[in-house]
Image (cartoon, rainbow, N blue to C red; front, side):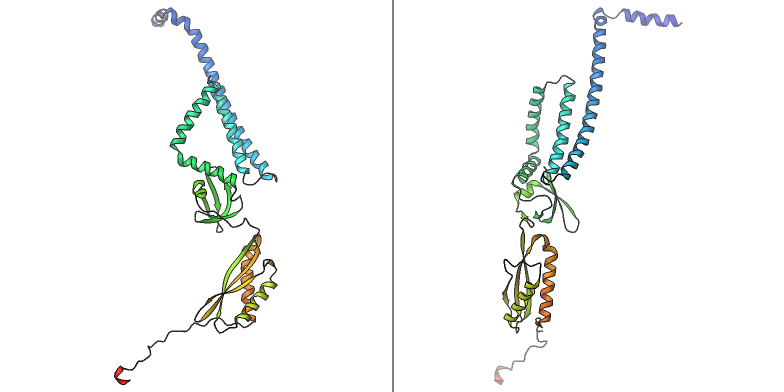
Length: 295
């Protein structure tokens, strides 16, 4: 039974055309070579992925310890190293399948044009990110106000800029929105001026009040002597007088110094017994007006 079942199979093999029989060794070699190429390509891809991640972390750590590289450029350089290794890996994988470099460049150029037309908004973020890195309106760790958000810059990426607010909120803003809007860099200049008002009773002697405030500012070590502090009359109201206080402080100490300056001014006014404005309550009953015939 087994012999009779094997005879048809032998007959089918014998019936294969001669051309196909001659091509079987070459086909076998092609399959083996193709399998080896696929295996090598997979190994190259895995090795490139691992090396890119390792070199990216290494570059990030090296940039983090370096004092000669701007903090704004450190994450960009680390990402460039990683994606550069990935690009080389892709080229090496494609070369295993006989893809020519010139053809690959032409293909990537055509694909880049098509992607650029389809992703104009995304690429505008990239262009804006490059311009932000080039023009430097702000840097990493600067305190800025952009797009209705105020906080410390954590990272300037190619697509988005990351900001952390004072209350710990994380905000990611597209670079195109930042570049097209107004940028307030709070920490760029070395010094910064305080602007707050003090309201006193209208009966107070303004010269005495101004002198008390200026003496208090002169005793405050956080207030700079140059430019000199200024106390000006801002509003003459029916019940009170408003004074505008202006003093220059080192930008690095501004947050804590502003509270300290206001507290010192308040204590100086209390020591000088300067009266605060007392609001005048409106009459509860309208004044009586006699009729015309009684006049």
